[in-house]
Length: 210
Image (cartoon, rainbow, N blue to C red; front, side):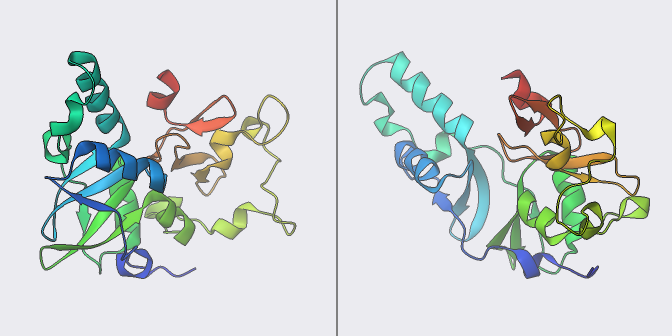
């Protein structure tokens, strides 16, 4: 397994971005049409914010309840956007990006070069690339499967109530002992260290409470 994988190797050079002045309704439609949970807000080429599904929906619902039809026409992305996503340089190691995703509880970082956003790396990209963790947690993703490609089923603690693999375990990374460490929430997409199973999905505690 390569240990020198960088952000440049896996980043998406074409990503979804909107400007602060874009109508919120149009940005929300883009979120739905593209099946994503977050847009990068750009000012020129600079990443200045993020627009999440929940923020957009909450603002649109508040506007509808507050006054009446079409009251959200004046809402812009800039009025409801959140803080900018974490950034990384294209030459940063992917392992460092993985640690940052977990530490900050986000599902993507923006690759920035010369002050401009040039790509996006998601938590799914990091897991798919098999970015190694530092210390004893580094693992070979192939080692968790037998020759048939099926997930390991030897540890009873990893099994769901129906005898199959617990979704929270199946969706997560594991350490050298096979214990689950972190994975991508199937609801919000965040890379978190403590996935739980709910309604047949592997989700983070926050999404389980919703």
